[in-house]
Image (cartoon, rainbow, N blue to C red):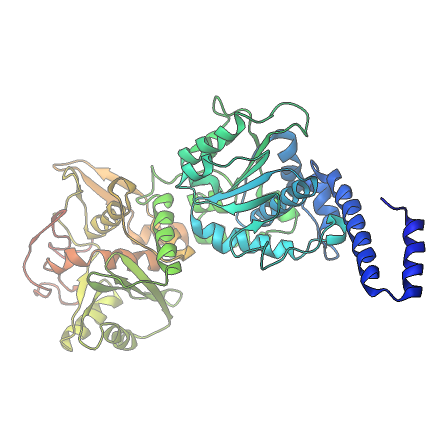
Length: 546
C-alpha cells in the first residue's frame, strides 16, 4: 500500500498532466483506504453496544441512552441471554433497534458471517413497530464513525429487512419456529419483541442456536450466539415469565425489571400518566400491573374475563385491520349503553358477526337525540338490530323506539334468567351475570375464539374490571359484580364494556321475552322464550331490579 507522501506526489504529477481518469482512480484508492481505516475503528465496538450507541449515533442535545438501557445493552455481550421487562413507554423498541444496528454494523465491518432474527408475538409488532424503528435509527447513524456509506434503501435497508454483504437482519413470525431453527451463521443475534406470549416452540428453536456456539468463553470466539428478549409483562405464565422467575434450567438468562420509578426518573413516563391510569384501570388491576408497573399479574381468578383473552381478541382485530378489513359475515347488531349521568357517555358498539367494528361515544345527549342516533344505526332497511340497556334513562329510549315501531332488543341486566354456563353446571343470578359470562366463554382460548375487539384501552379495562363470585343452591349460580358496585370501586362507569357485552348478548335476547322497566307488568319484547346454545335464553324472566 502506498504511503501518504507517495500518493501526494502522484496526485501532483497527474494534476500537471491533466489525466482525469487517473486522478479518479487515485481518489478511489484513497477512499477505500479511509474506509478500511474507519472500519477498523468500529471494530472496537464489537462487544460494546453502549459505546457504539454513544459514539456512532447522532444524538440531539440532552438525548442519550437511559441508565436501564445502558444496563440491558451492555448485558448482551456480557451474558449472551438477556430478558428485560418493564412498563409501556420506556423505550423498548428503540433499544431493540439500536441493538440490531450495533450488531449488524460491527459484524459487517469485521467481515463475519452474521444474522439477526427478529421475532415477536405477532407479525404486526415487527412490520408496524420494530422495522420502522430500525429504519428511523439507521438514519441517525454517524457513517464517518461506522466507516462506510449510508445504507442503500434500494439494495440494503429494505422494506422489511436489512441486507448487507456478510449478513442480514430478518423478521420471522414467532409461530414458525422451523424458520428460526434453520438460521445459521458465525455470529447470531435473536431479538424477541413482545416476548410475553411468544410460544415455547420458538424459545426452544432459539435455544438450539446456543448448542454450537461459545457461550461461556471470552468474547470473540466463533461461532457465537446472543438473545435479547423484551416485553411488557402479562399473566404469570409462559417462557418469558419462567425466565424472570428463575425457573430451573433458565438461570443462564440475565434478567432486568425496569421499574416505573426508573422510567419516570429517565423522563420516559410522566407521573401524571401513571396516576391517570391508576384512576382509569384501578391500581389492583392486571392492566395497571402489566402496563404501568411492569409486573406480571393475572386477573383470571377474580375477574370475569382475563386480560390476556381480551388482548388476544384485540390482536385478531389488528390482523383483520392490517389485511385491509376484508368483508365480514354474520348478523349485525349495535349495543347501546345509555348515559345515566352527566359524566357518563352514551356508547354504541357496532358488531358485525364476531367483530366489533367500532365504538362511538356521545356525551350529554338527551334521550330523543339518542333515539335518533340509534335509529340511524339500524340502517336504511333496519338490517342492524340495536340492543339497548333498558334500566334507568335507557328505558325511555327503548319505549320511544317501540312507539316508532323501530326494531330494538331491550337488555335488562337485573332480570332473572334460566341461562346456564357452557357445561350446563352453573346458573346465573341475573341477566348481567349471564351476559358477561357469555362474553367470557366467547373469548376462552380453549374453544378457538374468533371474536375481534378494537384496540381501545378503556374497553380493555371495562371488560376485565368486573369481579365474580358464586351462590349456593340448585343449581349453584354465578354472580357478576353489579354495575353500581363496580362504579363505586372504579370511580367511573364501564360503559364501553357494557355496550360490547350487550352486542354479543343479542342472539339470546332475540329469543327471549324482555320487559321494559318503564312499563312493568306489561308484556313487551321480541317474542316467546326459546332455547339457546347455552341453555335457556337470558332476560326471559321478571324485570324486577335486585
